[in-house]
Amino acid sequence: MPGSWTDSGVDLHLDLPPGRGRRVALEAALRDAIRAGVLAPGEPLPPSRALAADLGMARGTVVEAYAQLVAEGYLRSRQGVGTEVADAPGVRPRAGSERPTQRFEADFRLGRPDLNSFPRQQWQRAVIRSLQVTPHLDLGPGDPRGSRQLREVLADYLGRVRGVLAVPERIVITSGFTQGLRLVCDALVGLGATRMALEDPCLPDHRATARAAGMSIVPVPVRHDGAVPGAYADAVVLTPAHQAILGATLASRGRTEFVRIAAEGGGYILEDDYDGEFRYDGPPIGAMQGLAPEHVVYAGTASKSLAPGLRFGWLVVPAALLDPVVEAKRRADRGTDVLAQLAFADLVSTGAFDRHIRRMRLRYRRRRDLLVETLAAALPGMTPLGVAAGLHLVAELPASGGCTEADIEAAALRSSVGLVGLERFWHARPEASGVVLGYGTPAENDFAPAVARLVAMLRDLA
Image (cartoon, rainbow, N blue to C red; front, top):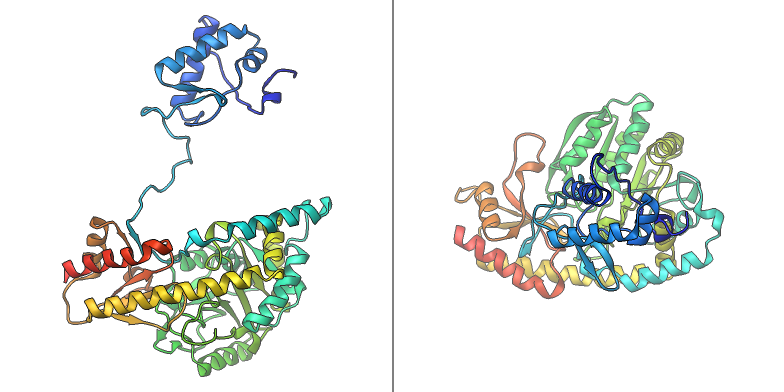
């Protein structure tokens, strides 16, 4: 339709109320759409000529309607931009468009890397190179396991860096660990499994995901040397390199025993290697998967190494689980963003990803050292748990009493400090009290002031 929204790039459905003049009806329809959130603040409107052609009215009628709504504060008109919805106080946000607005002056929430250090230029170059060389057919429906190019790159990378025994055919690209866990649960349920063992403590979302798949949950105790081996269930989820949440590394005898139990009982281990690249007191500990590739599903993501918003991860799957996992992935979403896969493959194959990891490993190590030293000097009663690794630590509260987790969480909110207590991560009765401190979020220049703000808040409580 020449001269319509089809050409202008803006499409909108409007119901003009009957019984009114054309201009008044158009004003009412636009006003109602803005109030209801159908048109969100900042959203562009069609050019007056295009809207007039599409509605079959004179252009002057549309110009007058726009001018009236600009005067009322519903619209704004800017030279070179056109007419768009104004940020009026009474305008309702579009349904589903709300975003969390809470911001912290010192943000130590769990599971967040330093997003200011995302390698934007390298990622941009990787995307451009991928667009230049990717055949058109590769942008269509493909293998639900993901891009063959990325799976080949990952097989080499995981073997070189994490000691994983992988071939491209057994790698499945996911939207992150949560989806990977759900895919494995669905595959296991389809094979008759009913129980999933999870470390205690662990992330509540992991328990919820396994339950949603129809699995009953069995807690696995965690001690200073990692999860305690046992024949708990049909499958067990472990974080052996850096236990989430307490930070222990699973001892070699524990690894061997878990693998033996799985192999003899025909069970499986899902190894969540969520931050395995980040070890600060020595070289990274290799993955468990190499001990028993037919009984360990290896899971990794780019959430901690790059950014959670990429929604990008991978599974290395034993042969017996491969077909049901791939079918579960096909049913779930038929595949993951292919351009992101190709860009990540480029980042890894050119060495840019390795350089980024080395740079961030040094940065996070300095942050952890500063946090531990400052806490020890200011609050010797709070004991850091776990090994020097990852992007978080747990500061255990003294058993003798004093302030509680609830006290700290309340004070943190008042002081604009983002953190969480340890209690929510236990399956049932907490075995220890403390606060979980993620040290990845603050920007590099803001980290020392953030630590000072955290310590000042804790000192006031003490």
